[in-house]
Image 1 (tube, rainbow, N blue to C red):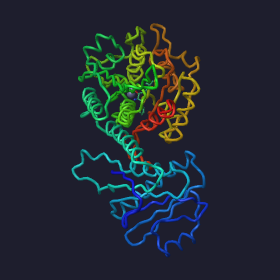
Image 2: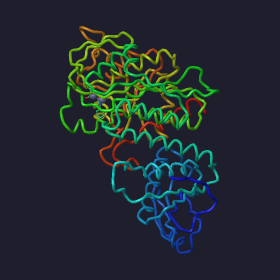
Image 3: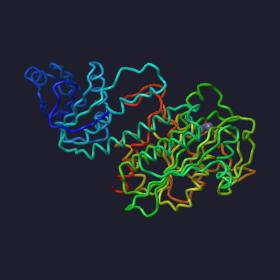
Length: 476
Ligand code: BES
Ligand code: ZN
Ligand code: ZN
């Protein structure tokens, strides 16, 4: 979708007018009949009102005065979705966004709702759905073209992340994922190094190799880097993403078809970090960022690793495998230990790691936990609220680590029946020696059916969150 700025609205198309509920809105081009209607109707906060005047379809969206709370921004995204629907219902190609409210961010949030709501994954459909509007015109003196360009790059990165998650395992193997990363790097401007199986073997990444054993596809370990000349951080920010392109559970096979059929989403953590670095590089943020992605599928092939195996990880830690379905933590452990060599100032890792996170929070929130300082946590929570990709924090108390010990190895990979999202976090923490955040996105990464501006399938969760966090935390 093309977004451009203008001073006036077109004579035809859909027009969303962002209004202050406290005063009678001005509405560009509205004739007396429309004005009279506006005067008559109640202007309840967060309500909308649609009105057609010749070839122009208005949607008035009312927001509380002087309000820029995260809730208002989210309501603005949903109003964006409404005007998108209005445009589609009336086969209109263009949507104008005008603001008569003192919170400039509402305009961008409306556009966000329109663009994110227009996403479709139709690559494999012979018959495409009805076309989406293609043009958004922003009538708002606050925002200049460069902000719109930045915004478009960010939303493009969310689409990239959604596309990667929606791509099934028969087309997106670990090697293909690496190819997609290299391509994304060329598009956005970051560098990629792909380590192949031989190299992974020579590095003795025992977690990644064990998980890959049952597969006919080779694993990859991907190192993405955005290193701008004038970076504000001396030590890099490292982002780690789980890249299990398909999770059958391995020999501890997933018990029901329902638990397996969406498991192409098990690389959503990787997709999130690929999207994040794409947006950061495309917008040339002056922050040094490295992304690490261990990638493989998890299958019960002839040579598959088995419950009872003891494996030696990249950093020498030994792990008793009690369940091959707890594979994410094994490949991530190697990546987290590998991250130490960069002496990072902060590591944020994201993964569709546990069913426990889904049971605790559903698809609404991200389960977060970590050892980073309070300022990092505060900024991350604020980014979560601003982007509506909200985080609920769980504790990494020592007591939770007890269940991850083993009688015969340093750790076991299963833990007990309760608080699985935390015990998984404790397992991962073992491999870190730097400020660390773990985000379990198993719930919100993939939706069985459409919800608001998130379509069914990959949601691209976390891309906007990390981008907002980087800007906020590094003040860039
Ligand atoms: N990929 C799954 C977690 C998952 C569940 C992602 C639901 C998305 C939606 C992960 O590898 C897994 O299977 N975890 C197990 C761990 C358990 C065996 C300790 C789980 O949570 O059941
Ligand atoms: Zn699993
Ligand atoms: Zn998994």
